[in-house]
Image (cartoon, rainbow, N blue to C red; front, side, top):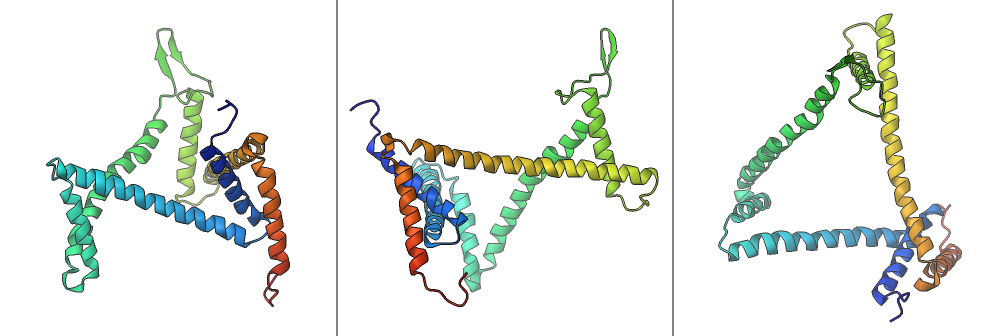
Length: 252
């Protein structure tokens, strides 16, 4: 086999990937059967894959294999799961409360310490960084914006936290110096929201660039010109659908 020859499974995968990508992009024209086909395939395959993975990892490997080895610890989560299903049997539905109480209690016990540590304590830790550090040469105040632990960044963080908290403190009228502090908090909030939105846009753009990269890669002769051929077929299908679909009173 020549080195440049693409394996059959990779070639089929490329054609399927290009086809589904173009199906999804066809929504840019309007809602159509090609888009709905790609959408349903995506959802159905995702759910089917998740079910298979859960069945294999939980029921086969975790439960069946462990019990076969003489480890009966997995029987505890199995029992809890069966108790939850008793919710559908009215006479013994009260047993499901035991399972739900255990799940909620255990989940809260695991989630609350992690939430407190990752949000509240971490925020306090970043807020109480020293403004001035002591070294052998005396005191120093770092102006390095690239370092989160620098003194100037600590000052900015401290001003931001205080002003944002003051903005949500409604027991004092926001006038004079209070108005300036609250307004400063608004600016910090807008910067935070803008950064979060920009990060979301960048992540979506990276996904779009990845799709375009695959379309360009699969448009070569090594992959049988999958992109141009399927693009023409997609356009032809949309044209045929547009010409043959019924024109009702609610049609665009």
